[in-house]
Amino acid sequence: MTKKIVIEPITRVEGHGKVTIILNDKGNVDRARFHVTQVRGFEKFCEGRLFWEMPHITARICGICPVSHHLASAKAGDVILGVRLTPTAEKLRRLLHMAQIVQSHALHFFHLASPDLLFGFDADPAKRNIVGLITEMPEIAKKGVKLRSFGQRIIEMLGDKRVHPNAAIPGGMNRALQPEQRQEILDRIEVIIADCQFAIDLFRDYCAKNPEVVASFADFKSAYLGLIDDKGNVEYYNGKLRLKDRDGITVEDKVDPRDYLSIIEEKVEDWSYLKFPYYKKLGYPGGMYRVGPLGRLNVADGCSTPLASKEFQNFKKLSENGVVQGSLYYHYARLIEMLNAAEEIKSLTEDELICGKDVWTSSSQINEEGIGVIEAPRGTLFHHYWVDRSGKMRRANLIVATGNNNLAMNRAVYDVAREFIHDGKVTEGMLNRVEVAIRCYDPCLSCSSHALGHMPLEITIHEPDMSVRQVLRS
Image (tube, rainbow, N blue to C red):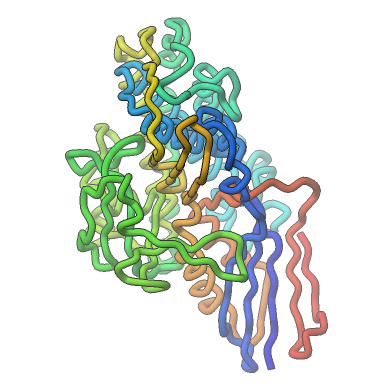
């Protein structure tokens, strides 16, 4: 005798998914699953295309994080051409990447996540959203808009438009940064850095007022994966892979990203279109690991910029072994990264080479395999291409950042549902907590596909015979 609760679609995330919660005959949670209901398909329909088209094709995977796919694809193309970027080209790509991190992290925290924190998990859903935030806390909302706009403006400078930019190409970049554009960035950057610090203070204030909630919400042990530089600092564009186990012990270190298949395998389940990557030495599902802001800060020894480095040390003090487990701390890590990216933008833009004209390296070589790996805002992103001698795509394998967190998101959904749903009693606030657990990870489900139309939140509660007992709509 069971009851089935369905949350469809999940709200305030990029893309579309649902949650099913199965209650036992006592009304307690028996199991819970997070389903991604979209089909990506890019791996298949890219076959037969020319590899230098891929940075522009794969950017269309998503309208929120197109830069991530654009750059990972261009890096794979660099390997196929067998070239090393010019110093200016690499700096321009890094600038583009840091702008993406600022705009994406600002979008998620201010527009999607902060209503839960500022209004409360049980607040009226009519107010618990970005419109409510604009109405009741306009100055906070404006800072989020300003941060996102700043990142998008840099993307527009380098890529001609704010979404799906035309910037990176195999071998480098297709345009230079103009001196007046550089000055525009420098004129705004100090205010942007200050707004990043404001966001960190906002979350730290929430933590101070709700210490037990933050420490216990979807708190579980897992492994963590991310890129680091030669000094062990967080690295977003280049670097080596480091993986720490559930106890904070480094089990894989300085792994060449091109050898990612030596540590990662993928599993397919029949109830979700999103694949389930896992650490192959621990098997499935025991090899669950987490990526993204929390993953990167947990595997790293520090940040490369002064203000973020100071905040990183505060973050590490949250745990005795330096590994922070609670899912709500994703927001703290995300805001530290936003500050780090803003500081990196300042450093890159102050460099005289950033306006150099030497932005592309030519090559007549075509290698038959290329792998590009970067840290997207949501986590480690892998683009792996196989081409023929003419440069035509034979096969592609993409491990999207959100996919790396698939096992962890399912674990978070189950833990939160089990904690808050008892004796068959279900409220909107309880179910919102399940969604909050997913939103911690900022999943980009639109990396699967796109959908159009009005999609309200609808929760259906079934009787033991599966007849509909109640339907809740937002």
